[in-house]
Image 1 (cartoon, rainbow, N blue to C red):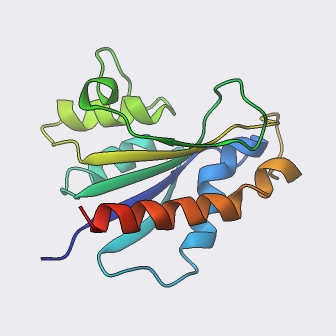
Image 2: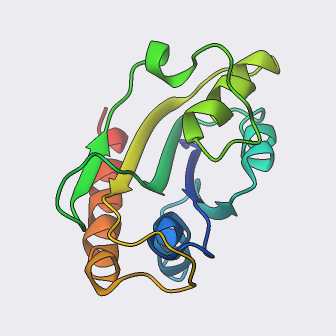
Image 3: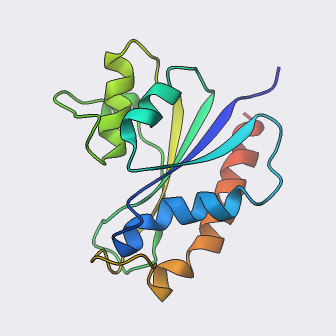
Length: 155
């Protein structure tokens, strides 16, 4: 049986480095992906991602700009547990991926195993370009995603 994997790029391309996830997925989708793996740009359409996840997947890889007060360009691989993925009082229209995942559960869906590939933003002011620092993290983020796919395929 083939695994179904969704790599979801999220973020707002009109606010600089917040478009990190969208850029990673744009570049990743230009590469050949393993069978069963889809890379899609959801941008700020959290509701669309929630509806997409009503069709079960085995693994969800969310790609987003995530601020944890580290040096800009720092990459994170977050392995959230099910309790942290779905909290109460979440709004699917919010840009927070955790809110979207909470909505999936409230709509009767089941949360997939999830990994989050995040990048510390440098500049989220209005503008349609990633900072040089975050742009230079796109390639390493793609490599990180490939490692996640390999690691999860061997489980």
